[in-house]
Structures are given as C-alpha cells and as structure tokens.
Image (cartoon, rainbow, N blue to C red; front, side, top):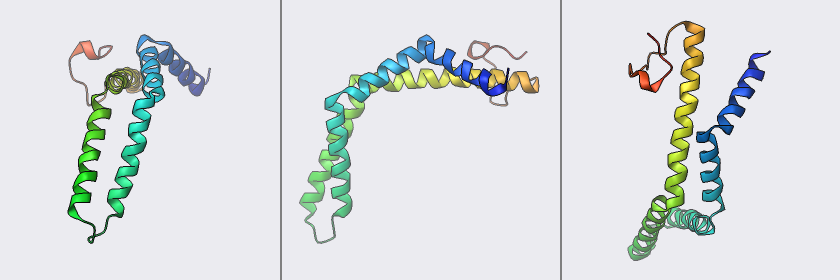
Amino acid sequence: MEIMELAAQIGKQIKESPEGQTFLAAKAAYEGCLEINNALMEYQIQQQALEQITEETEADVMARIDDRLTELYTFITEHPLFKAYEEAEMAMNATIQKVQMTIVAQVTGRMPSDCTHDCSTCGGCH
C-alpha cells in the first residue's frame, strides 16, 4: 500500500473518530447559525467602513464603528456554538498532532523534540 493511501485511511479514521465527529458537528452548527453569519458579515462591513474613514471623518463616527466592532466580536466569540466549534477544533488538532508524532517516532525511532515527557499525551517514547 502506498504512503498516500495510508495517509488517506488515517484521515478517514480521524474523521470517523469521536473527536472528528464532534468537530464536524460543531463546525456545521457554527457555520449554519444565521445569527453568527449575520454578525460575521456585519463585522466585515464595519471593518471595511473603519478602514475607509479618512482623517476628516468625525471621531464620533469612528468611535461608534469601533464600539460596534467590539460588540460583534464579543457576540461571536462568546456564542456557545463558536465556543463548541473552537473546543472541537482544538481536540481535533490534538488528535492529528498525536498521529503526526507517532509517525515521526516510527520513522526516526524517537519522539519529536517537542515531546512533553508526559506519557499520557502520546503513545510513548521510552
């Protein structure tokens, strides 16, 4: 079997793992949320408006746009769907990193230099 076929199988297994399923569900919920999509769109528009403001524009307008950007950012990043998506993404990345470290260990005969020496974080190196 070719290396890329094995990599594809590993990717499929990661996708089907509990971490992968949680990540995909959280991503779909986050991306499908109309509230968040509207807030993201407005955030982008407000950022563009802020960038187009010239020195002649009243400071009050700039302050209102900046305040709205802060409100939108807080709404998005504090939204439960965003938090669930972010947590699921971190768990998925940790799984992928463990797979990568295991592959490196098999190829080189030792764990990568960023080994934490906490055997609960990997398949073992000693």
